[in-house]
Image (cartoon, rainbow over all chains, first blue to last red; front, side):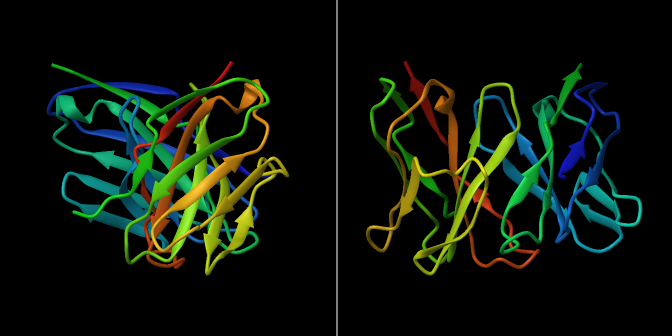
Amino acid sequence: GQNIDQPTEMTATEGAIVQINCTYQTSGFNGLFWYQQHAGEAPTFLSYNVLDGLEEKGRFSSFLSRSKGYSYLLLKELQMKDSASYLCAVRDTGQAGTALIFGKGTTLSVSS
Amino acid sequence: EPEVTQTPSHQVTQMGQEVILRCVPISNHLYFYWYRQILGQKVEFLVSFYNNEISEKSEIFDDQFSVERPDGSNFTLKIRSTKLEDSAMYFCASSEGQSSYNEQFFGPGTRLTVL
C-alpha cells in the first residue's frame, strides 16, 4: 500500500530553523516533492529529490534517503509568512508514473 | 509568470446534478492532472491526461468522472451525478513532461459544495 507520514503540527519562532520529517512506503518511487500550501490556496512547489542527498534552494533545503524511505524539509531564518502546511508527496511509478501521492501535511505555525 | 487558471472558484450544486469544472493549463505544458482535497484531509490524485487520453487514474476516478480537452486550451473535469461526498476543493495541475524533475503546477482550485 501507499503510506506517507508527517507530523501533524509544528511550531517555531521567527528566525529559527525547523526540520519537517517525512517517511514513506510506496509501491514505486520516482521522486519526492515538497509543496507549501497556505490555507484555502493551491499547493506551490518548493523542492524535489530523486537521488539521495541534500538539495538546497535559498532558505529551504530538502534531504532524501531512499534506503530509509525518509526525507526532511529544512526551513532556515523562519519568517511569519512561512506559516503554512507543508506537504510531502511521492511520485509513484504506478500505471504511468504521473501521480503524486501526498501525505496529510504538516501545519507549521511561526510566532514572533 | 504563466499560471494554471480554474473556473469557477466556487460551485454549489444539488446532489444528483452534473457539474463541469474548467481549467486552463500553462500553454506549453503537455500533461494535465486533477486532484481533490476534502476539507481537512490530504490532497488526492484523481487522473492524469496526455495526448488526448487518460494516462493514469486512481480508484476515486470511477464512471461518474470524466475528463476532456475540448479545445487547445481548456481541460475539464465532469462529475455526472454528484454525491454529498464529492464536496471538496478540486485542483487542476499541469507539467511540461512526466520526468521526475517536471514539477506539477497547481491552479487555485474550485471549491465544490454538494447539497
